[in-house]
View 1 (tube, one colour):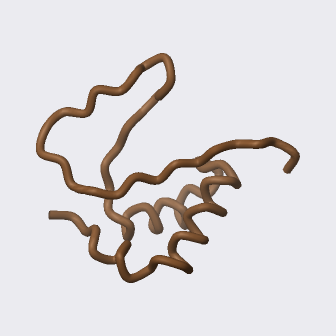
View 2: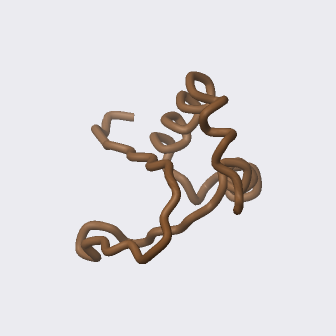
Amino acid sequence: GSEHELCHVYLGYIDGAVHANDHEIEEIRFLSAADLEAEFESQPDQFTPWFRMVWHALRSNHGEPLSRYTDV
């Protein structure tokens, strides 16, 4: 693609509400790495190519830390 898009993936735990600028962010969801992988398989067209590319790079380069983020 010729677009220049920034994709952000945040990892962490939170015990409270997230207050995002709704003019900038359409939706926030919380899911495990495994659940995200399942959504990539079942609904691939719901994600931008850039997000899939960034996620693949994260899994390839940081798979062990990502595996620590599971449903609690």
